[in-house]
Amino acid sequence: MVVGRVDALSSWAAAELAVIVERAGRRAFALTAEDPAAIPAPLQELVDEVVEVPALRYRPDDVLPLARWFARRVRGREVRFTPDAARALTTYHWPGNATQLQRVVRDAVIRGDVVDTRHLAAEVFSGATRRLTRIETLERDEIVRCLVEPGVTVNEAAAELGMSRATIYRKIAQYGIRIPGRG
Image 1 (spheres, rainbow, N blue to C red):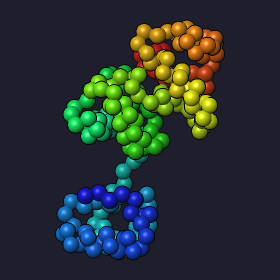
Image 2: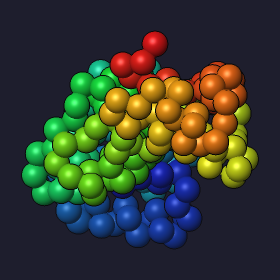
Image 3: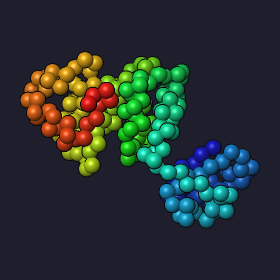
């Protein structure tokens, strides 16, 4: 059993959880906390070892196994990721960590048993260094939607979006858009 963010529990909830864990014999039990020092006292006594897990952006080799696991949980069977989708997932910086990866994978696998770049959220292709406005997010998402369609050129995407080729290139740079398989 894994209980997450125990550092955010109230003292009474931590005391109740400690009683439950003790009754269960502490079998296969793990706690997560952003700050191990902030784990409430009743639970602190149950901690045998603290293991720090680096953020997902520092563990790109863990992204695809986690994505496959999340996908299997949603679909109830194996889901395949195309090489381009796998490359997009493993090169993204995952500021929202595994929670963000889980959401992106869940949204992608709803569409089928093979995930390609066109199934992934636009945020995965963006290297934006600041929080985008709602309008910017919509614009970025539409550019990515057009660019991930198989065989679509930048000129065709620009025409579909009603912008010039120069503008779409400027927007690609502005939003840090990277599409696997494109220069």
